[in-house]
Image (cartoon, rainbow, N blue to C red):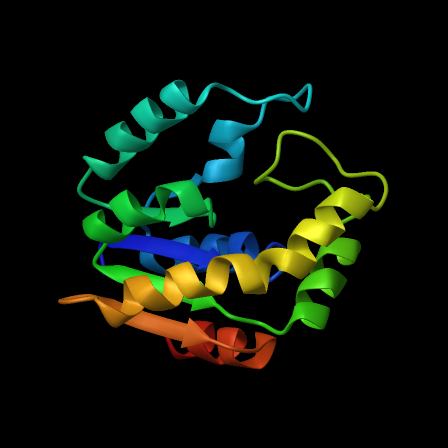
Length: 161
């Protein structure tokens, strides 16, 4: 496990898991949200994002936290290990609500209230992203794939490291 990608619905706990995994493995941690988003709640261009991602993927060791469907394929090709935090919708919505008002090392701002548009994105995530992920994993070769379906499974995996 040298090149790790962590995917899943917003609120599933990807960033929290990524920080714990980085602490246990010593692998460098990259939060895609910190690359994409600017502190003023705008974002960089897709070209700039893709260039920065390509530089990261060229490194020998990393944990990349973030789903970012548009970039799943190149990250999956480059990784040796994938964690899919495949938690139920209600768990993810609860995770999104729980981070309101919290300072987070994986985001350049603090969320102060619920965002109905973002909550709709979370609700649609399973129908829109699951087929892409399942197809990608069905065609996987030479990858260590771990699907964690509950916070208890996430905790158990980390405890066993």
